Image 1 (cartoon, rainbow, N blue to C red):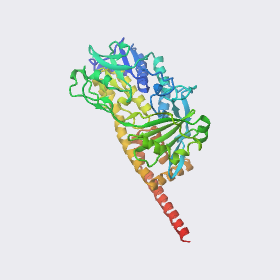
Image 2: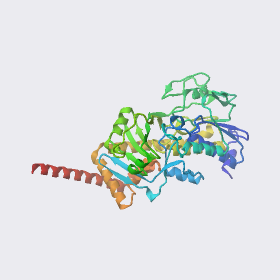
Image 3: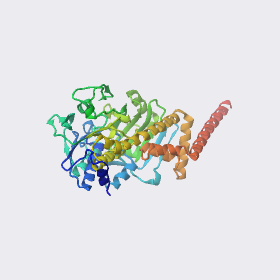
Image 4: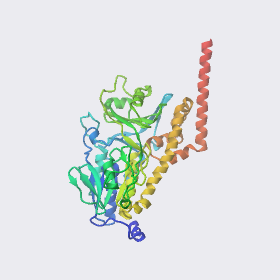
Length: 487
């Protein structure tokens, strides 16, 4: 018996899509496009004829912030593999550069980390048509590719910005500058964190504003109308920093190559920083706790960073940069009857592989809609567990990053880490620290798997040994210098 038939027998009274039903998807980024693509594919399998309207004002083909979704643009190896199993292969003009290794930079030295299996599966992409100031190129947009993929399945792309939403006859209706939409049977909100404004939520809560602003998003108010069933609690946010540095393809090949350069530096509030080569530009991503201008300047002026750039190159007075918010704790109750929140405005992976997180949650939501129903209870049973699984993994991820931060603070532990990775890379068996760092940097494996590997006695023993050897070598060198000075 099919999954669809089982769902019909288990709860025949559930709210469901029928032939002729129409779904509104607000946001045409990865979450909205994945959801639309999989919903139409699954509906086709069970003979369900539904319409999908994707509201997305951005074209994703122009240069600069107006066409960009503010993301570092790394597609992890695990996601590349998952998409391939779905029959989705990234075209050559979308992949700006294939990343075949990582280079870890610290104040105690640098080391190259090759991927397990020596496979080149990581893709560096632009989310829009290119950085501000560029003149355009032959490269395509990753988000544009996904949106086109959804359209090829039958979705209608409406180039309008949704300003608000309301309930009409028990169904959601959207308002744009051009007027009101028809009533929809289901509303999927996939606008990310930076596009989720209070007006959209107010209309779903009640007919007048209520609640207080939390992180730019209007939260749940005490006077919500219970029959609406929407009690969305916004995610917890933090500020990041992303910029595009115009280095030039020749300099990128010479100084950065096909490696993503990762920096573990003892800088306050900085959890992770990376330089990602793409075409003529290098994308700099800084993640941590409310990244500010002072921290950005401190990072860009570090010797470890400058060594990755041409010696005569200077940061231009004006370059493409942004400080987007990211989700560091998921939303509460990202669902209701006929309403589901997707991607960053629901739950996503902490710091890494946000596109992969959007894929997983959006596919789960599409499966719920196609095979089970569109009631709050359907989403609670079949969609919410995927979000909770991500939330649990993110909690473990916070422990991983806290441990990494402790290693960053002590010079001897940084030297021990460097020694351990270098030894593994030299022996050709990067099964210890190398694989832990690789999966932490790429997001290719769940944080729980990464953390479990670090608890293995052989891993801990080797790391403690390298720390001891680093301390011994440092003390020996200091003693030799003192002897030389005495003589």
